[in-house]
Amino acid sequence: MREPSPLSANVTPFASVARRLAVTRPPQSAVAPQDHDDTLRAPQSEPATERPLLYVARAPDMALVAYLKSRGWDLVTARTPYEATKQLKPDLACAGVVDLTGFGQRELGSLETSLRLQQVGWIVLTDENRLADPGVRRLIRHYCFDYVQLPVAHATLDYLVNHALGMVALCDLDAPPAATATPDDDEMVGTCDAMQQLFRTIRKVANTDATVFISGESGTGKELTALAIHERSARRKAPFVPINCGAIPHHLLQSELFGYERGAFTGANQRKVGRVESADGGTLFLDEIGDLPLESQASLLRFLQEGKIERLGGHEQIQVDVRIISATHVDLETAMREGRFRQDLYHRLCVLRVDEPPLRARGKDIEILAHHILRKFKMDSARRIRGFTPCAIEAMYNYNWPGNVRELINRVRRAIVMAESKLISAEDLDLAQFAGSETLTLAQAREAAERRAIEAALLRHRHRLAEAAAELGISRVTLYRLMGSHGLRDEKTTFDADAEAHE
Ligand SMILES: Nc1ncnc2c1ncn2[C@@H]1O[C@H](COP(=O)(O)OP(=O)(O)OP(=O)(O)O)[C@@H](O)[C@H]1O
Ligand SMILES: [Mg+2]
Image 1 (cartoon, rainbow, N blue to C red):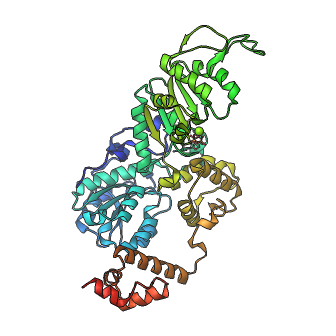
Image 2 (image 1 turned 30 degrees about the vertical axis):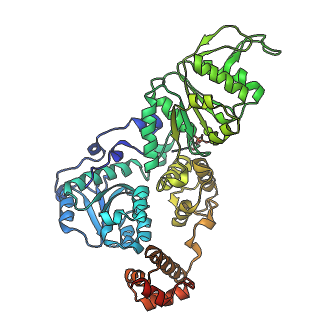
Image 3 (image 1 turned 120 degrees about the horizontal axis):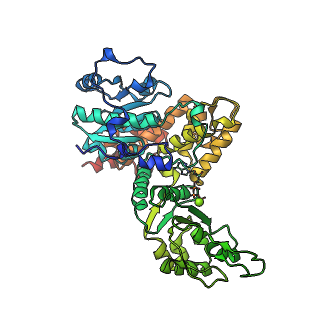
């Protein structure tokens, strides 16, 4: 068995950038384990003492159940993913243990629906074989706080579910509006692997003064990351000065960056301090650095080499102490190849590099962020909006999010205003076409599921019918017939060919 990962202990969803990254409390303090018997448990109405735990397993380990109950967990078991979703109380944060060893490949899809539930912090029990399956690995990466390989010591599992419950409890699923009355723009939300890696990187780079280059698609949080680095650095009491190099007309950039003296040019009636100088002691954030014209690139490079600036029309060299963070959504490698960006400047700017993951690669965070945004802006609606319909959630997972977090914010905000019921629908998000199964009849849904299962089995067994049929629990004749009715037979697939493959 591997060691429990430190990740769940260190990362707190929904705290402000500075607070969030500062949290390194010991795991037990999130929800302290209590040595008490069931009769001493506090009443259900006190959320702080509730310790709900959902245990999903085909064949629950009764010794484990008894142990966890003795540790004060309000444990319920479920033998199927469907039963699991039924056991949950709406909006109550809960720890979850799912034993994957008893579930077949075909059940992973319905398990995924349970694993996506935002209110549950999942720990996966698995074995080496299952871990080799890319589908299983993806589920663990996207939706779970941790996993362990069986056999596992009961005490270890108690420790891990404790972490998981502590983490989801911090998500504060049903916070009353008053608690969100002052939305904090600096909040940085993320629980998936990629975001936790990002938080670790932020902590590390904040401790140095080296230049940082942040790359990522539009709307992924580059500016938020730059601010997080500044707020965690020794410079946090000095200014954080952002400048969008793409938004300032080229002929004004030099004076905007370096300032000018009175009389430097017509209309320069008084001295102006530039952005670089105004960031003295703090951090200068050069956003959209890829749009910096070559002339300004040369001046910036000079400043980076000498640590001094000269205002336009001035003769004095002014020493400025700033830490430079830059960002762009364009591909600088191409810009360098095409001669639009100086290589020497790039190497100066990119001592440390941070990559922002796109939203589509953040798994369960999509849903967590959507709820976070809803909580933050729900007062925009006269209606009391409580959440999202299952179809809306499905659509959010299916959609590709080219505009990333910014697009998610815009869609949820618009939906808050447009929604006509207490739950935001896929239509309100303008994502109805991504909701998939919304218009399927039960018969159509069954047929689609059957086809998917057959396709997956054939793929896994490289079209060896006997093996695929055995896995699906049907005869080869039936599989062959079903393949015909689903249009999955091609000229290569014959009964005999399959038999030959086994000889
Ligand atoms: N992890 C996150 N948690 C919460 N909000 C986020 C997160 N990432 C980004 N945001 C929000 O998304 C919006 C876009 O973020 P930001 O401006 O930092 O992105 P960007 O990468 O700089 O975008 P662009 O390339 O368009 O300049 C902001 O409102 C920001 O607060
Ligand atoms: Mg930006």
